Length: 118
Image (cartoon, rainbow, N blue to C red):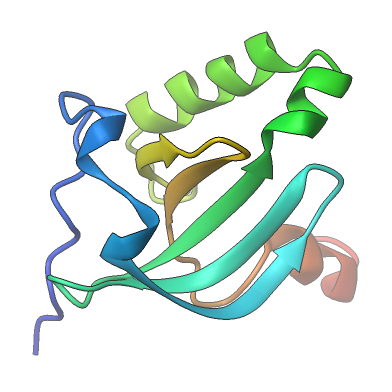
């Protein structure tokens, strides 16, 4: 059985095409210095994604504009089975939201830490 298709999140789709109201936010998957990641479902397609929420205040504070933009460009362009896909993004006055492919088995770093090596 084939699951639902990923939402139509293409580089051509502008950030204005998405808002937080398009998603059902689920449990937290992790947190970092600049934000958090949540298990999320796109309402129309029911497709499961990870929503990375980054606080603009932190990006400003640490002057990470260029690094974030570059990460987004690279992740959006790559098509590799071992690299999570960036489907799209949007923002509000305080946060940037990255719509990412959901990794069902969790973080690679966690797997590596538990195994010691691959």
